[in-house]
Length: 349
Image (cartoon, rainbow, N blue to C red; front, top):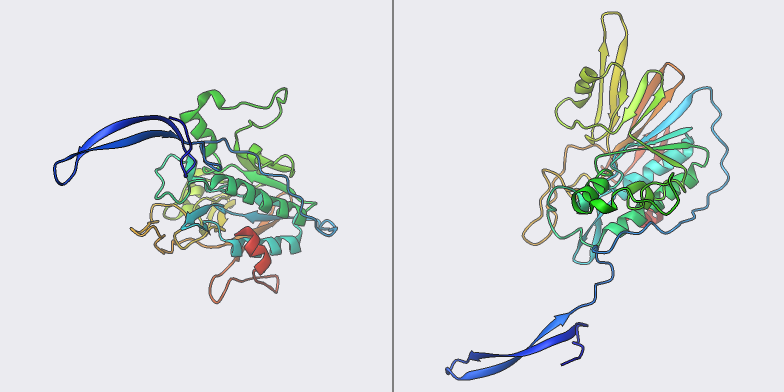
């Protein structure tokens, strides 16, 4: 028997089954086996590169200064939960937009993207807390690329360096666990390309002239990396590990420690917080989903913000820029107040 069901499935075989009704009489039922075409948007498909996006910006003159100004954009955890058909971001669009405005105003010569720009629980090693993330990965790739495009358009003269975070590494680890033959494959005759199914390729980082690296030296005395510590006095622990100053990320908090050695030399470790949602939507040890499929609001001890580092060859000066949630989002930097722009927030959300 051939045909199509109203739901779109194809009947591939049929047979009879017999059951007894409440009067113990035999009833014959005609049963079918169906096959369904793959659902558009299913994550059984391979992810594709973000669609090229052009965001025009007015011509901007480069910053003129004897020192180098570095803007640091910490953990964004760009992602979405899909709850009752509504997209709920794990990133914080308000914080991201305030950060974009400040960075554009200051026109730093160097921008550091501190890693964990994407959340990607779909390919993480931990079990997801719900089905909220099914069929959201392509949305994340496309949306994060649009954000990077806007950052590049706003800062055309800046060198942008993207540090590798543990969440970006999830893509390679997922392939190694589940599809080893596809790991590291590149487009034909493109040996200098990123692997086709990799985070920097999917995000078109080369197109945006964004460098992708594990660590970066800001000047002779200061390096930056994503980091791997997130408990207790994180900054103090890094000072026990390194013999140089460090701008770190990963723990989502503002932190600062200074260590002076017997010879008078001093090193510093500091961080500027995060641009992720802090109310419980980011999957973490403390996050929880209720029996009704809703995210339980639970504020982590995370700090929203960004930061700047002004430096010459030897000396540096960090400045933290908190982005507060009280009475609406706002930040104050260099005597100017910044608030989210509704149209940009909507685009990022």
